[in-house]
Image 1 (cartoon, rainbow, N blue to C red):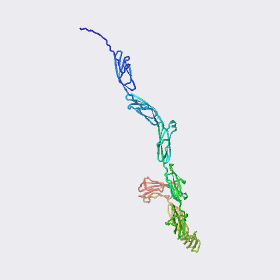
Image 2 (image 1 turned 120 degrees about the horizontal axis):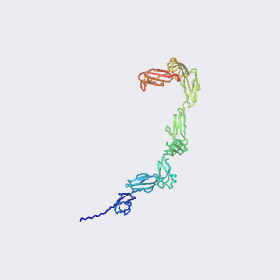
Image 3 (image 1 turned 90 degrees about the vertical axis):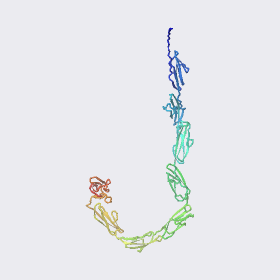
Image 4 (image 1 turned 90 degrees about the horizontal axis):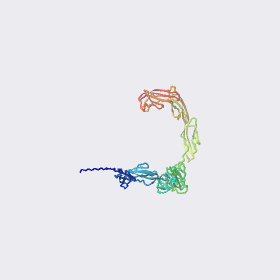
Length: 621
């Protein structure tokens, strides 16, 4: 019906509360999170049943809140809370170790981040110092945990031991170990000792027969141990091996040798040498000889030997027996003690005597069953020692000749002149005979001498010249009669002499009757050349003749110098020794044949003027 009606109403839209719990969140175990729904003055309902504006949560899960404002309008929000676990850390209980040891602390949780109070950032660290150690570990979620441990360091025993020692082989030695006085003062608990031999004591006794090493371990009350090793070197003993006990014969030499590797020897005889030689008598029967040998290490070895001494056979034997020519004698070996000995002479006979007819040495070996005795008997021939005359003698002018055959072995003389004395004087030539009777073995001798007349010698010197230059040679000859030899003024012998200087020359002619002499004076010549003569050519072809160019020096000169030059003035040779000449070479190479210049300077006396000579020589090839 077209009717309209109108009405108006006012609609008011109230805003909803704005709720924002934030995004889903993760926290670490042990942490908490405060959730705030905002909208102060509103009404709140949490799924946890709480009705406060904010709540604190620490448990994983979903959290929502419904907020109603004063208009009755409601809004809600939800967030998810994740709780990440903390790293699990266990450094272990507080621990004690021994000094010098170390401990490894491991924080576990591989792949995490680490921070130790030492500043290190590794998973594990090794520590050896006392103190507190902590570590903070952060895992991959950023969650951190920490742990702490206390490390205590116990001291090691401080020990002293007997040192390394060198000791003679076979000797015993005590090895010891002890704690230092300072350690004992600070640590009152007793320690335990253990040697490598198993002995649990602070000392052991050992015998050293070879190089050895022993260790000692000392453990204190905390179980901390300290060890040390003692080295023992076995020094060798002298290699001493005397012979076995033996028997010997009286007076027989026996040498005892104590070996060569000692530096000191002490024998029971008082000797101090390596070897001793004994000649024991029967009175020393069953003697024991001892020796002590010390080597370079000071090690001592001892040994002994016992000698049983048998007596030698007792004999009476003449050592020297005389016999005459053609005589036969008996040699005796007489037993003094009356014992029954066996004999052997050098002719292999076995009696106690031996008949001999020729001089010489005879020996006899006597045995008493233990020892041999050797005696030598020298049989001497009493020779005919009556004197002999020389077969010839010379009767010199105005000198009577005495013939002498005197001898202490002669008892009678008979000369052909009728004389009966041992000496006669004759003054005429002829034959003279003597008969001599001797006192020994009734020996006789008949001898004859021919006496001839002698003459005094004569001598004269013949010379080629009476004038001489220094360095020249003049032949002197001695001629004469009845001379047996010639002796010149310089002591040389012979009929000739070569003079090289001016002066007086003498010669003596001699024989058994006397001496005659003569002399000649050689005067210096007035036309002598200078002191040095130089050759004008030489042939250095190694044939042994004229191979070297050198001066002829007639008498001693001083400050000598010789120089050789080639045609261009090059110096080829120089010497200050006039005996050393030029061999025709330069630097080892032969020089060409041809002419070469030379000059010489010298002094005739040490302080005289310097003299010069020069000239040309020819080298021939």
